[in-house]
Image (cartoon, rainbow, N blue to C red; front, side, top):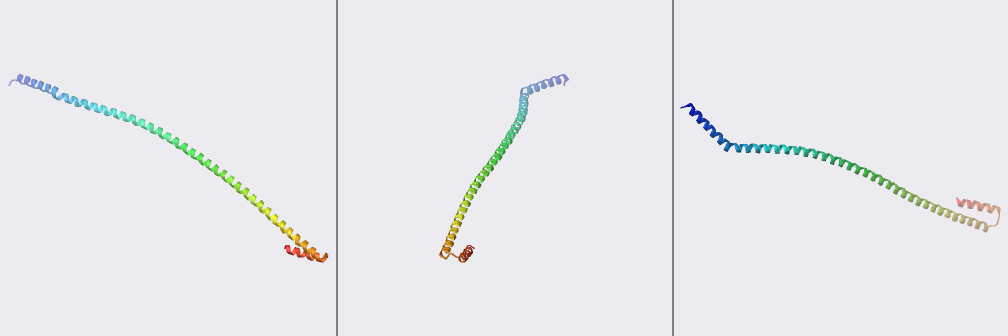
Length: 157
């Protein structure tokens, strides 16, 4: 065998192998590589978008949390204000009720005092009439008057 023929046949075989590889093997490999590059680029872009969306979500959650805290403090403030108003209303109502009860009690005391004074007047008048009647029925005598006064005094006790 001739070395030239071997080299030429190997060159032809290598050329056929390269042509076959370029024609049939290389395009699917390039498509697979391009598809893989595209997937990797899409994955990196999605990761970047996810990171950006995570930052935005973090900012939004911080804003929502801040707003919720502010709203909660307003609600607490309003509740404290309302409780103060309720306490003041209760104090005012209690004061009005106590004033009304005191006025009623004073009126009742005045009425009882008037009734007691009237009863005492009637009793004193009855005693005076009884004493005068006893005095007039007897003779006018100092000893008899003294006895009558002593008996009236004993009746009063």
